[in-house]
Length: 293
Image 1 (cartoon, rainbow, N blue to C red):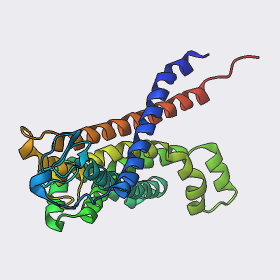
Image 2 (cartoon, rainbow, N blue to C red):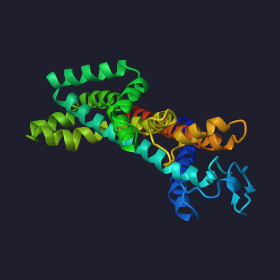
Image 3 (cartoon, rainbow, N blue to C red):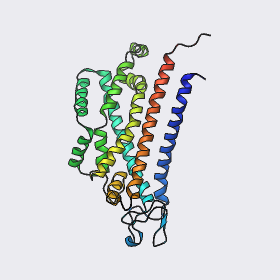
Image 4 (spheres, rainbow, N blue to C red):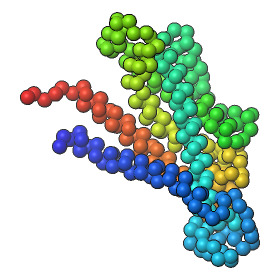
């Protein structure tokens, strides 16, 4: 077995493990709220069910895997209901920002001119502003909510992807097959859409995968500060915020969403890093000379 393949095997295993973790989390987020006997926002007999420790039974005889919060709500059910919001916001924010970045980068890299200079200046200006500060300002002006968070994440997450796609498009545009297609009379928009852009999206896919974890962290930060998802709807950020005053008495309220958030971000990072390494290995293999017969 070639040494290059042997060096990729451990990383490939980590990538598969990360993908399995993300799929399992998505499945639990879909199934657990549907199978729960009570909704995640339901509040019953608070005095009989509040602050029950994990793996314990409340006064009404109900067993709770991860305990209950200060309002007597089951943390396990609420945790996976929040996963729907956090995972959905992370995916939507990354996909929308990535789509905008791909579109702007493709046009800027292919046509150049004043549009390229304008988009480059706008992206440089936005990258010079810390993203968290920009998110806080826009979210405070627009008001809290899931739609506002997704929109803000999309509008502040396109710059790096735009620069990657722009550079890739400019590199692909000078390849011989593109020049040949242009000489055969293929229209410029069709050439960009059908031949150039599909070969310039690998870096964008990696960046969007990494961006999911980053978007989830930013959404959790906004929700923690009260500018994101609002109670009684659950997200990992506002669950951590709601449990911070009970850290000494009931640490499981804030610890459970915090652990899941870290696991998800790490899984997205490992998956994106594995895609980047696979891309680099494939490019190296394609450029290396074939062995003599």
